[in-house]
Image 1 (cartoon, one colour):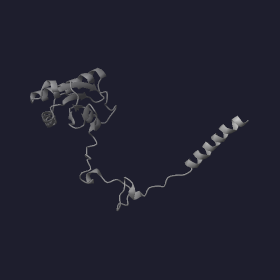
Image 2 (cartoon, rainbow, N blue to C red):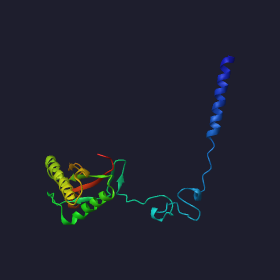
Image 3 (spheres, rainbow, N blue to C red):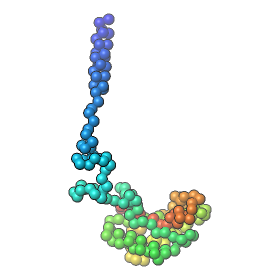
Image 4 (cartoon, rainbow, N blue to C red):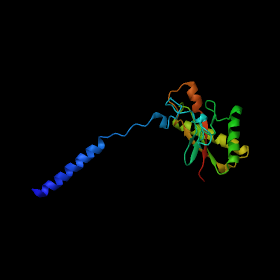
Length: 185
């Protein structure tokens, strides 16, 4: 019986110690000492990034720009097309010029031109149209001096299009996205 009393008493002692340690809660910090607040600021909402003090090493970025290890999406925008067309409109050419200028300033990068369509048409037709849109953007870029080896194309067709969308949404689906590729070929 003595052999069983020692482990049971140690187990009971450990349980009491654990319960005693768990019953205490740490004191709550003063709200003025938290990250969201500072002395003199009585509201608990963070300051807008644009009003942060200089020297914080924070960069204010457009929330539409998505950057990962290999790509930057949304930085150069998209070229939009008319229905069933791969002709680059005159008012869309400035976007491609901006992309060419960006490549001149950042020669370590390349561009991916991603062709998209609205939901109308067969999958095969839309893949072909998306390819023609991306190819038209590539042709225009090479005509203004961008090296062809700095450009890649891919067609997404209507893969990402909103089905049964209204006219305004379909206009945004008819595009060639300009995506910055950060990796070497």
